[in-house]
Image 1 (tube, one colour):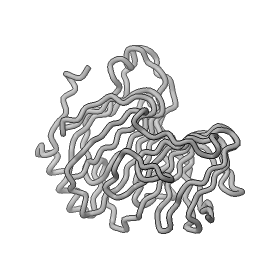
Image 2: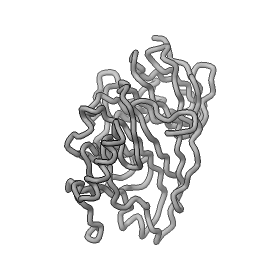
Image 3: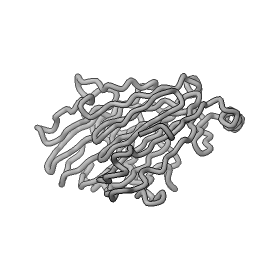
Image 4: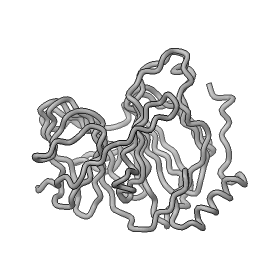
Length: 290
């Protein structure tokens, strides 16, 4: 199976949020979106001291897309106006369908604020087509032991399958649009071929480590844009490495975004703002959260 080749490597821009180390490869100056992938924030890695203030993502609204949050280290509490609440720890995943609109908060649990500790989180925004933008909001949070960890590359790599398929295995999250997502942990010397079906957009972000794609050295904290010239992505790890990887059908519709809203027209953005301001998204109360 022919491997896709690298079209361009897009660096993450450093954009810290208070004391939270933040890098953002998408959107970037050379890549406004990678249809249907809209946005990626990479928070950390860093170590929070004891008696810290925690993450700064208090209640805020979303409409028109999905968020997938990967807790690589640390822990993250989620609350939303649909009544969902969870604390997900290292290796777990939060998948939220904002759809027609909700308010949510992503904060540090009280124990983490007291004791501190290491933290590294990725959050990916995945667009929804117009026919699904007003879907009923939904949320699922799963811990590490609920996510298949598939040994690959003769035991030198582990594929943590979030959604879609890898070989005969299926990820536990069901994407509305058939998105496949995984994190891949490679040990030095691993050679792994990841699926890249024809016609699908490939998403590949190097979280850390040294890898090559063919003869091209991939850079840490870079989003790798692929040519559509193969049905796999063949990687070689030259050190321990971690990547966020996925593929999806492009939507091919207009994208109009305004902060936390992603729709198809300015009129729909104005309606989202009006609906939020009138209270139609509901609310989240943090006072009672431990």
